[in-house]
Image (cartoon, rainbow, N blue to C red):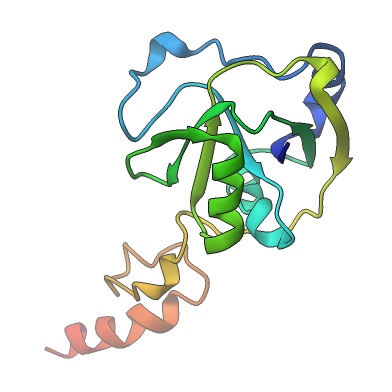
Length: 173
């Protein structure tokens, strides 16, 4: 029985402990597609802490103040949706999803459980370190810089170093 971790806001930890993880009530706001599935987002626990908790930084960027990990077990044969971020998902047993993540250690891996998790199934709720994971998308820095203009680099760290030489060249012409 693989252990899964769901990352939640610390402000919700009390209600999760009492009522479990419930399905989001925003089902009518989006349609399920092959890339986006309805359910509880969680990742299988692996020996590599970074891989198991990779979504922490993204959630922090979206407004979570302090995150906690909600740990629970799923039966080996229970079906879950798996796939990489923004790619088509496929339905596999929970044990296979855990094996895929342990084997590949894929950044951007997503697992969606298509049911609620009751409070009895939750094994632990623990505080997590607050700086971890990737921002925007996995391996975003491997693509390199797409544009060096002032508008695109305006709020980026050290963005001025990129656009100032181009601005000086443009003003010289």
